[in-house]
Image 1 (cartoon, rainbow, N blue to C red):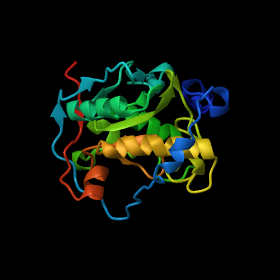
Image 2 (image 1 turned 120 degrees about the vertical axis):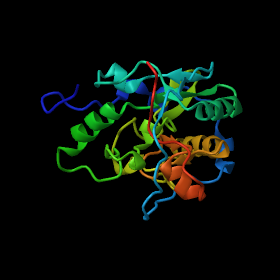
Image 3 (image 1 turned 180 degrees about the horizontal axis):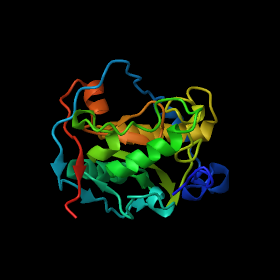
Image 4 (image 1 turned 90 degrees about the vertical axis):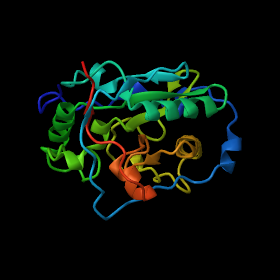
Length: 240
């Protein structure tokens, strides 16, 4: 596990910069709407009671499972990507809707509550990081961290199975990671590919966290607040 004597990972291995990839003409992406993200100030609605076992592995020919935390040997991480069944099915709709050559790569999905604790303390026990990136591991079940619900996905686009860094790497907790950071005048290719990701994910019902372009939620407290719907998912764990 990363520690003060072992620097936090930069996850550069988990994606390629766009100038390293031979992409086709993507000028048609200019027609996509700008990325939008809601920055809520009110308290989020409470989560429902925890549920055991309502998780499924994400498996689809156009989706890569990168298991970023497992590869970096974080405690309580897993080598597979798990999500609520409805979330997985919606993600398959996203994958099938992408243009030829494009797919998805998942850096992280369901997250063990103990891993959430490890991540939070690794990043926030050191001063300097602004709030809003790693959710606090609140023991109150009504304040479920989004990844512990099985309704949250950290992901990016792939081109011919190569994961792409869309302006930043995964878990790069910097201003450029914000969902709208490249709007309207950021680097054109990175901005337009974020627009593509935002279009297909939002069409499938997901909402983006305003601080992280890669972080998408469905059925969570954030999703419920944005859509004025009841929260669908609280904390969950696999049966085994």
